[in-house]
Structures are given as C-alpha cells and as structure tokens.
View 1: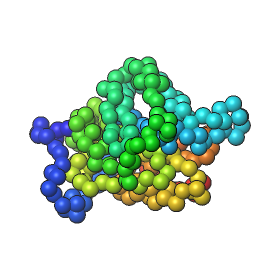
View 2: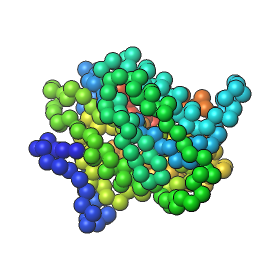
View 3: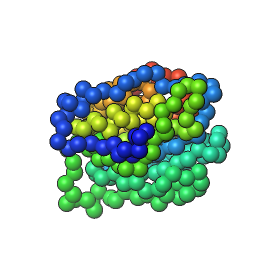
View 4: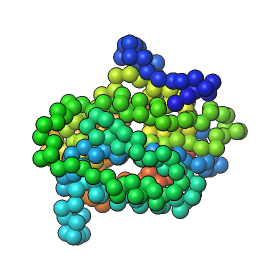
Length: 269
C-alpha cells in the first residue's frame, strides 16, 4: 500500500503500542453526497475458522436448511450482496480474502466479473473439527495480520477535495465468526493510515452464538465499535436467526459515500 507520494506505508515492529494509539487518524468528515457514486472496490474478508462450520443459525419459517453451517448462510448472503451490487453498478469490483486461525489469505484479486468471486466462495471449505485436534488455536485473533494483508494488497485513491472527488473508493466487508475469541491490534500505523483516507471504509458483520451461550460476544462487538471510532463504518451483528444475516447484509448495500451514519446497537440476542 502506498501513500500519495508513492512511498510504502507499513508498521515498525519496534514502535510502542501506546505511541501508535496516540497517533490517531484525523476523523474529518468523509466526502459524502449524492454526486459521490464512484466505483466501489470491495474486499470481502470471510472468516473460515471452525466455528463457522457449526450449525448456529436457523430459519424459523422452514426446517429445510435446519443443519446448515454458519458459513453456508454467510455464502448465500454474500452472493446476494455481490449480485445486487453488480446490478446497481456493473463497474463495481470485488476481491476475496479469508481468515483461518490467525493467517489471513488474499484469494482473489479485484474483478468486476462476479461469477469468478461466486465460484471462489463456493469452493471454500472448513475442515471438520476432528481433523484439527493437534492445532494450537490462538487465544486472540491477530488483527495486525489482517492489517498487513490489506497493506500488501490495497492501493488507496489519492485524497482530493469535494470539488474533485476520486473515481473509486475502497471498502472492506469483514465477516467475523468467533463467539469466544477476542481480537487484538497492537500496531495502529496501518489502520490509522487507512482511516485517514476519506475514501476508505471498514464494515463488519459479526456472526456469533447467542449471548447466553458465550460471555465474550458483547465485548467483541464493542471492540469493533471502538476500533471504528470515526463512525463511518457499519458495525453489525447477527445470531441464531439466519434471516438476520440477510437483513444485515442488505444494510451494507448502500454506497458508503451516500449512506447515513449508523446508530450502532447490540441486539443482546
């Protein structure tokens, strides 16, 4: 990832965490308005951790898909999202990445060919838990690794004034599916650089078990809200009812330069 002068921007492993936190981004109002219907470059980051292979969601109106794993519902909702965005503007581009354990992987470069992204989605698999007995699972999800992946693959548009807007914006849509695994970000340099760009947005859809079954769920949701302290991202969550996944993905259809700021609330479901 490069800045406006063409220089590489990245984290320095020797810098102190509190130093990085204090270098908070300038949350000046993002450039918005009806005229800002530029192309979106949307990075879909889908969690493929083993919990996504469990059957934690159901549709109350039908038992046909009663035992479908969470990732199956997520894939269906993402296909709906991609198809609808493509109909809204065929020039929108999509890229695909996954997070497995603590190792994010960039799977598909940006393309406006939605069938390629759908095929990649359908090819994703989650290994059964019995095949992962000897794996040492992380205590927390390492957000630094996700930031490093974005740093290596994103090119942000140059910052321009409201009278000369950029011809595209970049949006990350992160589907996180770990009810009991908190997140950690220790180096904020890349994140702050992303947030300073008025054409960058970070949306989250947190898929989790009911709160009564997992004590960390609300804390994880609030962590995402705190991370996006500029209030320009959509931080959403869903549990139990698969219909809520579709509802929340529907909220993400709006162009980020045109949508209203979201009033975040945790459903306590």
